[in-house]
Image (cartoon, rainbow, N blue to C red; front, side, top):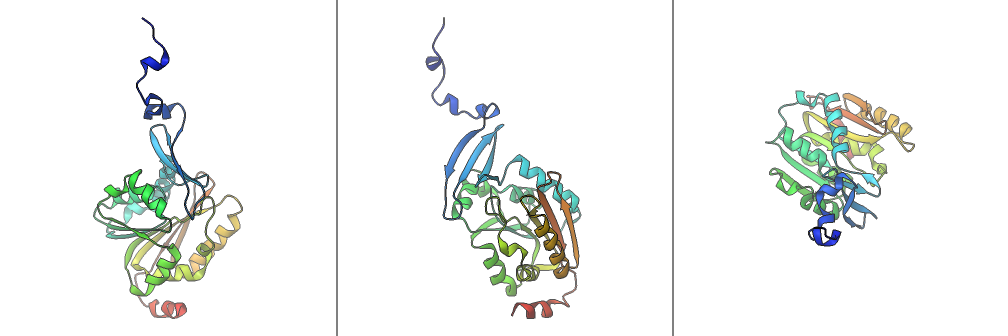
Length: 248
């Protein structure tokens, strides 16, 4: 017995997850005051976030962060109890950190309430027990809290506007403030770009980090588009007074 395509297939058949193994499908498309085009795409059964055409989460982004963590020997930093993440995206790096440091408190800051909502609802960040979100501009948050000595063991900076990096990411004041948020021996891992004319800017950023921090390294990623940086605050607090004076 034969039947037509429509009578044999259940309602919603062509919206099923398995079809994403054949053709990527758009789960959601929206906009916000900060991002003109936000999309959630399902591909090979996995969700990824695209913001203004740039990938912000998904298996590919996970591989980038895992490679950076290996390059900077993050596994040798076992005693991490407080983490700050600047830039939420689809939460890929937040999930990696939560898996690596299940007892750590994670504070995630993003300026876009739409991104935070999507991260909670579609990328299951609401299930991360020790995670809290703060709706704020990343630079303003860092500068405002610098003198409060928030004492983070690890700060991850992953701030993008689509395919672009905000200008404050190459300013000395931002990193001087960021340094004051770290506990002695605390670490910063920063995601930056190499593509689209960012090579010279990334070289200048490397030199800037060396002026602010005592232990700095970089990892030009395998995709030749991203460049990750690592910086560590020295264990001594002897420079706090001088750095604090710069901020005043």
